[in-house]
Length: 573
Image 1 (cartoon, rainbow, N blue to C red):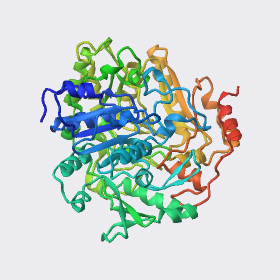
Image 2 (cartoon, rainbow, N blue to C red; image 1 turned 180 degrees about the vertical axis):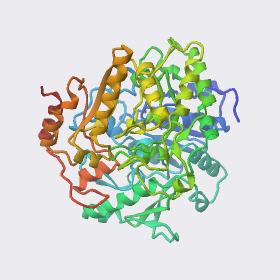
Image 3 (tube, rainbow, N blue to C red; image 1 turned 135 degrees about the horizontal axis):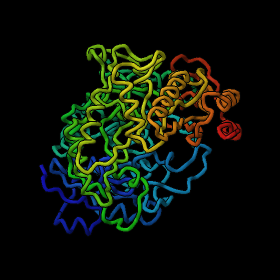
Image 4 (tube, helix red, strand yellow; image 1 turned 90 degrees about the vertical axis):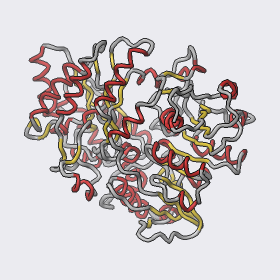
């Protein structure tokens, strides 16, 4: 294992300076290369480096010239790895109205156009043409959420697995540290392909018919394209399996073969989670960007990630599909260690921008009886009502906040990530003795004057299609918020976040939202028009007009002008 780690090279000159005569793995990515644990490319590069592998990164290669960026480092000893970056490239490029965005937060200077549409497919096809005998492993958000048949909003049609369109050899889905290490070792040892195909959290394309006993057989891609009900049925099975502790192997026929998706690894232990964050990140953009600003880095450079996963189960969200439903925590010691090292970063003035995760206040939460969790098939631990087996105590999180505030040099530790208020409030009030304490501390100590929350809508019928709690809970939140702020004498605002034109939402629903009395006096700038993204229940509803949970029809607004009108209700006085 490597102890005194080198800066990950990105050019032939940097490789030469290290004295290397070979590279084990070359990663191609659609983002600028930032050596920070919030960026998956850096995590995988540093993780493989820890285990003794030589890794190089080619960030944002030019795919429109003579392809010199794809040739400059030659062929790796083991394989090429490809990702589109921290976002799906189509979400990165286009707005909900399918207009081209004018900027890209993951590119130096925020400049647009540094990556292609469908970047994973474009990069992989180029590498396969140039080096047909070198394996290509795809991963990251774009590959992970397109691992099976999926609806593509920008083409308005179903697409097959990205394994089919790209020609990649292997797909590592979800959070990939364990998968990629095992796969790397297997490729290095020249293990039998049949043995490699047993690695968890791996997907691949096979010829012929699957004969694995007990595998879950899905409808073929071709049938899904002809029959919207078949696609909805497929997705319901995929989603159910993705939220189980012990899912089956998934088999989806396509063409003259099938895509196989192996079950994931068990949730990472605290020790494993610590090992991913204790890698020798510089926490800085690569030196090649000296003097250039990368907007996405500016947003997270002084942030701390506490855990992975989300058990909220919102229908429009992909977090659980990528990170898993079960919360995987870092230890308090690992988090405090990282915070103490922030003082070494240029420009750090003692203010942590975010102590959080997909949902900041899920840290330390779990089922009271693990045996029940291991058998559970619920997508959400909170909808339609909180699971009685869920421990919603905020005691551990409050203890962590106390330790953070005692670190010398820390002035403020803000919570910039989303929070779930149904974790500390219900219709009768606060959930337990830690709930009021958490809400009060959140408002008075961990926000910079504006507490952002996401009720998403006011109408309960729409909220059911979103898998979100009743708006009455937000009304309770506002009442408790106003009490805490008034008694403290502080000046603090509550800022709700809403979505327009979600499946099930009509123009009349938006009119009711705009005139709802509980929103009077609140700042309404946090609004978004619904964008169907791959591998969400909401995108399946948008595509099929069916609720995949019940197969009953659901209203979907697809007219672009009417979608704009729905969003415009946010701004009507």
